[in-house]
Amino acid sequence: MRKRGMVAICVMLAGAMAGAMQFNEWSPAVSLESVPGTDQALNTAFQDGCPAPSKDGLTLYMASNRPGGQGGLDIWAAYRESADDPFGAPVNLDPPINTAADEFCPTPLVNGHALLFVSTKAGGCGGSDIYIAREHPKKGWETPEHLSCSVNSAGDEASPFFVAQEGDGALYFSSTKAGGYAADPPGAITGDADIYVSPVSSEGIVGAPVLASGVNTPANDFRPHVRRDALEIFFDSNRGGGFGLLDVWSATRESTSDPWSVPVNPGPNVNSIANESRPYLSWGATMLYFGTTRAGVEGSADIFFTTRTKATGH
Image (cartoon, rainbow, N blue to C red; front, side, top):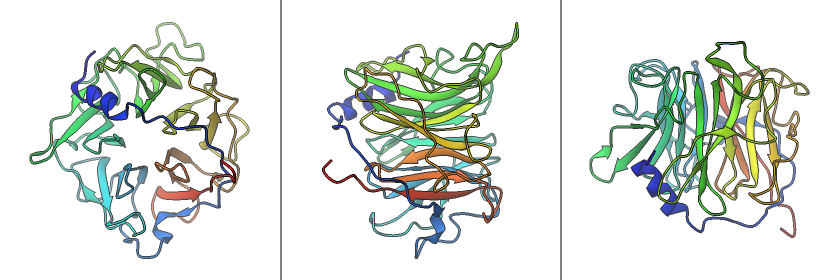
């Protein structure tokens, strides 16, 4: 399926690949509101999660069911003047992005004028589906486009993320569609969550999704985020070996033609005995945002972050 927004993505990301990067360990995670000057409405007594910073770091998209939205989970955005400033109070993106249904898992595209997200609104293929919306410089957000049932399914799709790779590009996301990594009962239309990837050509054609090699298990593997050089992937999973319920996991590879390494858990500096979900890197890959339900959050979930530094000599 050719999508106008996907054409723009491929053109904007041409030549964006970077060399392999090495990093030190993650710091202990803290609430994003702990940054001095951050508006105390960033996290609320409600559900706040799905954090996703823009490339320039001046906008933080998120999902929340706080009052003042269009209904259920909505996409909100917090802004700041510079990358050194704290974020202000989140504002609702309003229609046509948000509806009376749930909108979540926002992913800003590198050109800054398009947004991937998922919605449970009517007219999809079932469950939560992936949409793309473009922002007109004068008219604002245009009506979101559905990515079709060749990508979406009767299950729940989540956390769409486009990344440039050698040649063209790839759309990563998770889905609970039947026929994934683990066997499903006969006649099932949904199953456990797995991570998928669809090839995206330079013409904007989104290919049929296949299971991402090396990162799936019989457990639930959700919400992938891929570093901009396509050599590191983060996701959340309830697989064995973690610290609690859903944990953040990551894997690396030497090149985009190589398989992913065995996923590793970054440890208690990032994860807790509760849920950690939808990890999302800053453009420089030194800050990781995520949602958590750990003890001490203001509501049912809050946005936390952790940082790391680039290893000397890389």
